[in-house]
Length: 417
Image (cartoon, rainbow, N blue to C red; front, side):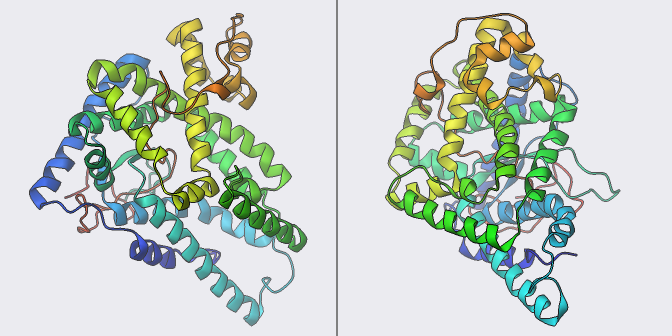
């Protein structure tokens, strides 16, 4: 097994550094978990009726986790995705201090722990921000079958945000569920979508340039990106560490991610007013909360590409809204026909071009999506919803570190409080 990442170090670092969630009683924790499960099923019905996507939907309620559980869960998911690629990446190292022998093994062991600590620290930061996610990549269940996906909600984060915003708790919880249930509908109804995303991720990772000269250049780019982000610029680490080949692959991956996130944002907006009475208040207050972040937090967000993700929500939502307005929901749903009918990055910004290519009709383009801002009129500022991070759940109520239920073979609906 590869030693490029020490997963135990990642778990230990992440669970040690993560901040505790809001303190609630066990009865309150039970109530939150119960309601989140119920609302996930309520949201599933609304999403199915609105989008027309109902193929092979999993009727089970969402799995509810706490912050340490989210970290352990995501690391399990990372292992599912990354471990099959590790040997291939290791083979690309070639000769040198990492190629083998006693010294090479020592360097690898130290490097794997450093990488594990970095992964853990990143997940510790994200664990207090993510409200929900649709888990694409899960460990096999006991009979060896790979699960197709599962909806997970991070209870302490949802409670923390709703308390901080002072909004109706049921409305806010349903608002989050609407977005995440849209992702469940996408991947359950479009059987090729999960494979496509995984293939793009695999190509991206295998395109890593491990030549020492190239690595040195990437390190210089990282240093420049950090300096630019501190000054308030738009640089991020994702762009800094890419090879030219990876940039091309990431363009395709970004396009599909923008589509699925924007679709979730659009559905949340369109369904919300009918079923979430205070959705306008929630949206406005959430945007105000994000705008009031500290300078350090804003710098970290830029470096990790989180602000770029919010721009994707706006661009993707604009694309979906324009296509539905001009071609109807059936016309938009042609996007799920095959990988060839997915919009390109350019078509995301120009919905008329996608409609002309796939539906064979010409329309007048709407507003430039570059002029849209997250949280603006008609474009809800979705919470940091962490979509397509793979995981298997760890149980626990808000702020609790309860017994784990998320080891290999864990099945949907087994989370406990």
